[in-house]
Structure formats: structure tokens, C-alpha cells
Length: 629
Image (cartoon, rainbow, N blue to C red; front, side):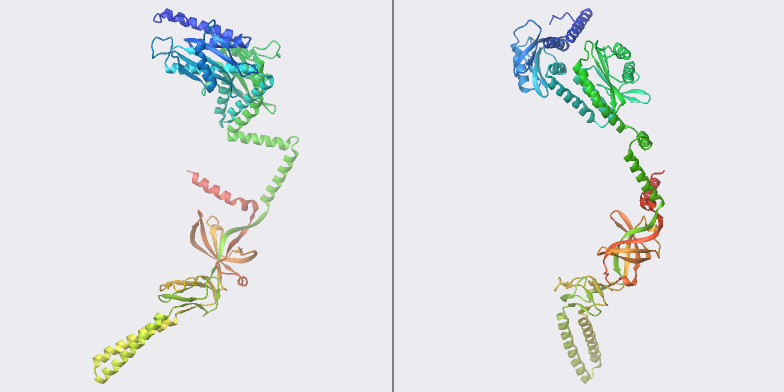
């Protein structure tokens, strides 16, 4: 690098800046006019060194076509021969496949803590390292060092374009397709249309070396810009964006892409708006492609490159393929973001076109069939019945309890057995009671002997006391006899044992009043229906219905509502009311208490459409009432 003048002098600083700007412009012009890969790499390396600034040395190493070896292709500055000091950092970048930053042991700086730095970044094609660029720069702060590495990384994309351009034609076509799919995946990876469009144009600008990429969609009032690369917020009323909209409109009016400046052998197209956009933005090349879906224009994609850079044929071919794929995707993604009225309007218009327009015979037939079904539901009537879970209960249910504390001695019946009145259900252990009875008999005889002796002595007081003791013994004896008589537990009437099983509890202790069995009659039942609170208003006493039990699904039993009890039962998040109904007298032979099934209460004859939609309508009414202020 040339020596720096005294930067404290404003004039010197101005001359330095002007000289640097002139060198950069000259480098851009040479870079844009490069004809061979060697010139391309040489001018690219000079341009990168000017941009990074304070570069001591630089080299570009590329893989030879059809070989696995690497060779230097460009140097900066030209004329120097000994660049072995860059070999280590470039070989390390090739070996590790990533960017490398390392200080040089013997730098040009006089201070040991301010060494020169060596930077290298690999150039990849489809994940494979195909080259490397290495530079040596003077010492600078860490933030400036990171900026230099980032510039080297971004600039290496031009070399990747060079490698792709000189690749095999079939390989180039495959790479173009892969790049198009990469753009599409970036667009589809976001659900929001605004975010997806911004990510797409930013990725296209980065991969294709464009200064700005703009996506516009066609609306009833004209083209509207939806996304601009490298920015989230922008002013649509800015002159530059208005000029871009005009260029998009120019393309959509002609129905074909526009490349500016046009090629001499290209098609004749109007480029007036593109020329104005190029004059306003200073772009070296502009390309606009229409986005089409099923023959209908949905938008346009405009790309702008820096001065001195135009769109070559491979890039145009890639962009044409990208535009062909983006048309349907942009239309679909934008449709997902549209408002509900817009969707309804489009759907209604499309439905009307199918019904009254040509073709779509199958759709017309299906529509007529659906219309016939709806008409049948609207005008046909049916029985409106209320369904409810149902179970059978005995009209009378008697509990058989333990008459006194004791132990189970014998049990011959359990739940589900049919019993006759007076039939033995269980027997309690009576050994303690019999022992107690013998003791009371002996005590009574002893009191009798004492009473006779008192009578002989004519002791009235003793006679009175002993008489009372005899009466007490007689009462206790009578109570023991009563308990002995109740050790046999018998059925109170003909029926079925609903609950109770002492066969597994022989010898187990019992408490006084403990329920041993529950017996229900076989000829008297009540039907209990659990009616949902939403249907209870339609249930009235005297209404008829039918019952189907789970154990006899092929038989229906007629029932009549007898009582609506205000008993509310909560189950499974719903509230139910207890409704009692009576079975017909001739339908109880095979029934048993505890059977469950489904009962339906007949209410009235209503339209089928009302019967099938009443729950939804009632729910909507309730929610509307809750939402209303």
C-alpha cells in the first residue's frame, strides 16, 4: 500500500478519500469487463483488497477443472513472487473447510502486541470445497477484523458464481434447479406472507449478487410492492419504489420478462419504465419477471445489480425458472393471508362460475344432489324424541339388616338370586346366645329358690326385692329368646337380591343395623331416566316413550312418564335430571332391577332439519347471550 499522508490535514484526508474512491471505481469497471476466469479472479481480488483496506498481500487458489489439485489463480499486488507466508493459512482453510483468522508471527508492525493478521475463507460448491481466498492485513481492532472477515465471506459468492458458470452444462442445470428449490424452501418455510416474501427477496439478492430485489403483487388497483430485500419496513410512496412499481406494470402489460439494458439480439420489448428506474437508482442491470398462476398474472419480481454488472444468460434462465415456480406459490401464500370476506367472495364467485358456466358436469350433479337432500330435510318431518340413559329400579326395595352384633355362621344366597318369602338368606352364630340363655335360666331358678325361702320367713322386704330380680331375669331371658329366633335371616317377600353377598364373609363380625341384603320385588319396577338439563323443558308428565335395554337390544318396552323430580346429578361435566317412568304391566317377566339401557321420550312431530340442528342452535343462542353486553 502507498504511504499515508498526514491525516491531521483536512486537505490530505480529502485527497486520500478521493484517491480511494477512484481506485474502487476503477476496480469495479475492470471487474465488470473481465473476459476470462483469470481476469475475473484478479480483478475480484483487487476489488476486495480495496474494500477491506490496509491489505499487505492476497491470493486466490482454485481447483483445476476435472482434477483434485488446487493452484493459485490470482495475486495481489501483482509482481510479488514470495507468498509462502499465506500457504499455511490457505491450506488450513482448505483442510478444515471453514474461515480462518490467525496472527502472523513476524508482522510488519513494530509493536509485538499489534501483529499483522492472516485471513482465509473457503469457496464451496454444493458443500464441497472448490477453492480458497487468503489475505494478509495490517493490525486492527476486533470489530474491524470481524468486518474484514465478513466482507471476505460475502465477496466469495462471486467466485462461487464463476465456478458455477464454467461448470458442466448438465451440472449447471442441476445446480440451477437446486438453487431454485432453495429459494422456494426459504419462501415456504415462513407462514406469514410478509415475512416469507422478505426472506425470499433477501435470499435471492444474497445468492445472485443483487443490490436490491423487489416483489410486487397485482391488486385490483395495480401493482403493490410487498417486500424489498434486506429491509422489513419501507415507504411505498418513495420515488424509487414508485419507479419499481411502474417497471413491474410495464412487464405485466407486455406479459413477458424485461431485461435492461436489452441485448442486441433480444426480443423487442418496451423498456421505458426500466430506463427511468435505472437512471433513478443507478443500477447497472435490471431484470423483471412476471409471476403467473394458471394463465393469470399475480405479481412481478424485479432485480437490480450494481453499476457495471448486467444479467447474463445463465442467470436469466435461472430467474425464469424461479418466476415460473413462484407464481402459484405467491398466489397460494397470499390467499392464505386474505381476510374472511375476501375468501368468501372468491369462493362464491368460483362456485357461481362452476354452476352456470360450461363444463364441471360432476360438480353440478353433486350440487343438485346436495340441494335435494337439504330440501328433504327442510320440508320432511319426523318424531322429536329425547334420548336419556336409563336404568331399572324396584318399586319397593327392602334392606335386610343384622338384628344384633354377632358372626356369620352360614350364607346360602347372594346378589342376583331369586328368593321366596320366608326363605333362609343367612344364619348367624347363636352359641353365645344359647350360653347366655342357660345362664339366665339358672339365675332365674336361683332367684325362685330365694323367693320361696323369703316366703317361708315372711320377710316382705326380701320377697319384694327377689320378685323384682325374677322379673328382670325373665325379661333378659325373653330378649335372648327373641334374638335366638332372629338368627335366621329370611326373605321379607318374593323378589330378587339386588345387593349383598355373605358367602365370602363366613365367621366375619357384624354390627347391629349393618345392611346384609337388599331385596326388590320381581313384579314392580320404576324406570329412571337421566334427562339432560338442555332437554328437560320438553319433558312432561304423561308423555310416552320406549326403552331398549343393553341386555335385550332387539326388544322395545313401552314406558310412560310419571314423575319429574327436581334432583340434579352432575356427571362428565353435564347436569342431568331424574325422570321416573312406569313400564307396562305385561312387560316385566324377564326384567331385573339394575338393568341399564337407553330410553326415548316422544315429544312431538317436528321438521327433520330442526331436530338435527336444535342443539347447535341452542348452543349458539346461549353463547350469543353470554357474549352480548
